Length: 204
Image (cartoon, rainbow, N blue to C red; front, side, top):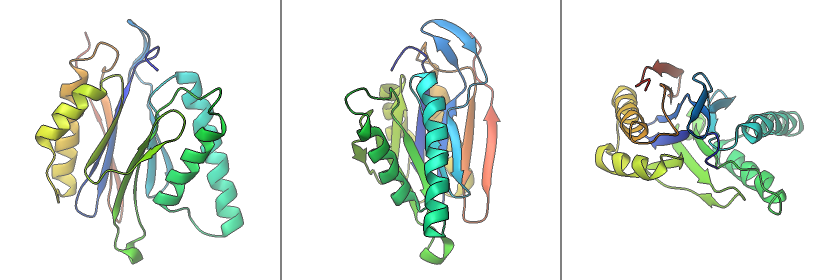
């Protein structure tokens, strides 16, 4: 889990949700790349963050894309965030005796017709789901992210305030973790669009 480094955090706002990851890919203390995103869009309203072993991140990204496409074809509708969280959980649990070394974080909004309710979830590497109402963290800086998120997060934040809060949480946490950092990417999902911004971080 700590070979390649990296951290992800997701937060709930008022009719919006945000997910952010750092951009470092390392081999323990050796930095290999500084543009390795760990967040991937699943639908227009769902994004998954995959911190962990880089090879498993790429494998799972493609596996989830395939399974979501199959769901869309079979069901004739877009997958909902909670359904996708259970799909992630069962996909990881299938491989529990030789697990993928990834601890996913899921962020999404329900359909506007259902009130655009924000949804976040996290799982461990064998798919045990946790469904918090405020924020979820994962990766090598998770203990620092918990402290920052506890300090900064408030209920009912708008999209801009949520962006500021999640950005400060991630940037300050990864500054204290040698295996994460080198900038970040933040996605804020609102009922009508996804706002994506790239942040510059410390490069040392």
